Image (cartoon, rainbow, N blue to C red; front, side):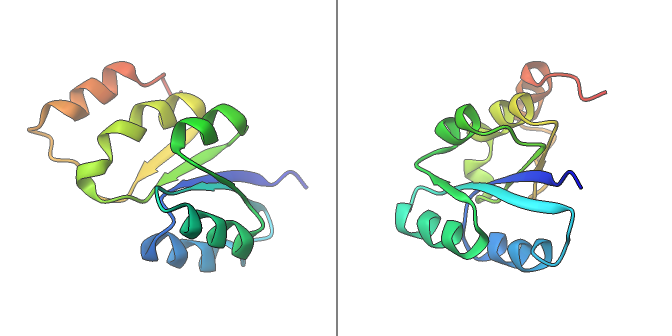
Length: 115
């Protein structure tokens, strides 16, 4: 069975809730995690069997991911969104973006088509 390879940008409390659910799915593999707090990334990697990375750029360059979960505070989502959507087949930001701000428009322009 081919498992869906997931990466996580952010390894805090919300990410751990996802880890718990995703570990119960036989067709999913949490392959990579990154977090600015390297000890937290290392612990999440140990808990999930993933590889820890120092930042999202290193993770996206090193890993072949099917999907990327972006689980960082809303103010920090703009920077990893476009690279994640280009690197993986799918990406997901948990917090809704304010459609009146300029960064969602830039994200749409920079992201590769997902169809």
